[in-house]
Amino acid sequence: MSTREIPVIAGDGIGPEITQAVLSIVDVAAARAGTSIQWIPVVAGLGALEHGKELLPQRTMDEITRCKVALKGPCTTPVGEGFTSINVKLRKAFNLYAAVRPVRSLPGVATRYQDVDIVIIRENTEGLYSGVENEVTPGVVMSMKVASQNACQRIATWAFKFANRRGRKKVTVMHKANIMKLTDGLFLNCADGVHEVDYPNIVFESTIIDAGCMKLVQDPSQFDVLLLENLYGDVVSDLCAGFVGGLGVVPGANFGDREAIFEAVHGSAPDIAGKDVANPLALLMSAVMMLNYLAEQDQQETFAACATAIRNAYDGCLQAGEKTRDLGGSLGTKAFAEAVIRRLEEG
Image (cartoon, rainbow, N blue to C red; front, side):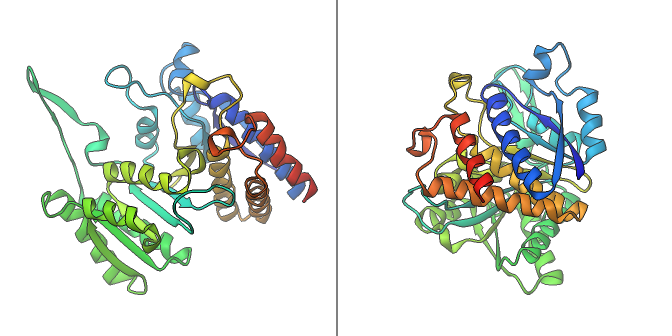
């Protein structure tokens, strides 16, 4: 039986308990698929500080570099003060320039929308979100929005390549190039150029971000792949999560040319930490994304089989009403993991 090493950052708050739930599920699915995973615990952010280490310890960096992949639970980011986001630090450290958040309707999760199937692709390294700020004079602060030809071209190419590989039909760029003619104008022009030269088979459209948000709320089914700069992508991906039940049911991944980190996109929810009520589904779905990625990178079909089995199992649980409380069910974190495992063992 082959073994794949994968570093794991459990995170803060509810992170350790949902991470443990997810690892237990993946271990069962992997064993049934004829493979195994050796989880390598590493720390970052608040969890690292609590162990007397720096925010992003060298060992964590080394293990992710060696293994080329990692799974990460939610990490706390102080609001308005304290240390900078560990998520941003990891993206910068490994040049994880493409953030991907698939948003799809789930069986057994009732929302006002049906048949939502959108993938948000977000440029992950530039723009206002990168946090380049300074105080001009007391009482006056400035945040810098940076866009480069290289980064805009790179994310556009990545998005169209992704859409083409996954059989997606349309890429929509959301922008504010009517006002920010240089930064958003560059982003839009790069996407248009990549489409025209390399991917004319894919429908390309653009919309101003505020109008695009209105259209999303009116009818999300009219969209397929969304391509956005950093800050817009952060906001719109959370908006889209609301179509399908919230951040607790949406996975996330950050890709670079060498490494990829898969993560739950929700917060660390310290108010419910340790109470066995947190929903592990977002992190579990991120683990499924990771397994499919490994199947492609490592040429290991067993990982793809493992991913499919887990997805079928949690879909079955949701359809049968075996859900956590945030989705209208009654199961706790451990009980939900046990329900998914039962379906894996029966399947």
